Image (cartoon, rainbow, N blue to C red):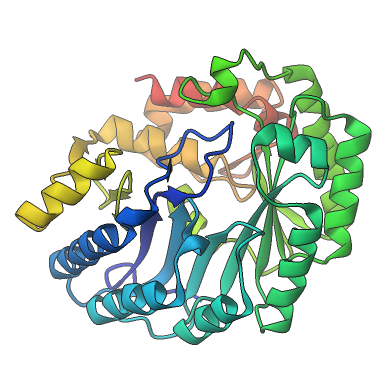
Length: 372
């Protein structure tokens, strides 16, 4: 459904709590600080109220709660959080309201409350079905946990379910990856996200010397694309596959570089010209909001060249591609033309879109688009 961009927006909320931090995770997530949840939610409510005052009369057509592990919150926490969202913004349906979940710790009561409060899309962080790989990742769930909660969510009335998977893991094989994809597809998800392992400096994996195997990841990427497309999924973004009509509308906002609001630790948002990012320091965030009513986010004003480069870079993550503006062609046409010659992009009329090879080697394009 199309909405008026002047009256609609998306909202991202970050819940930075988890029971255990995964060994690959470089997000703002803090195990051992569950006692701070009430204080954090009070600060988050104040920031949501501030965003609503800054952008009055906006309708939320997409809403996304990430983390951390948002599904850790109790039903009473969700009622308070969603009351604040609805008090500040119009949420008339049909909106897409997504919630990231761990496969363990989701109860029938939570599923019922989420449905009651308007959450209509759940994203389960499965990563793998192999016990040895889950243990290596530091995950606390099993394949059996995932099957149980996935079926329970269906029974509770959720008709939009995503499974997050990872490939290129230490000890993972192409045969094991194929089995994982097959088992997940048997559950008939509506959306599947597949991410190659990236070893970031702040993670346990980096400190332990884990390294990604680029060649193996390239093969696994092709295996996933072939299996999911054969099963009827649309490969609509580098790492994302959906049954027709189940593309993640909130993430499409980011990839189409549309304005979107954010609140909470590490949350980022964009108004069309300026990007703002909150601190990752949980204590600093709470203290600032308690003292000033808001965290004074770091702001980066994008110049015209940067905006054109970002527009292209984000759009070329999508199968739909982009029709570049005259300004974009004058600045970055040489990058597009070269990428077509190299088989990374396909040109149809005035539209440029990625090939599968272009997706695999996307950094070759993106570095040039963001380097001005």
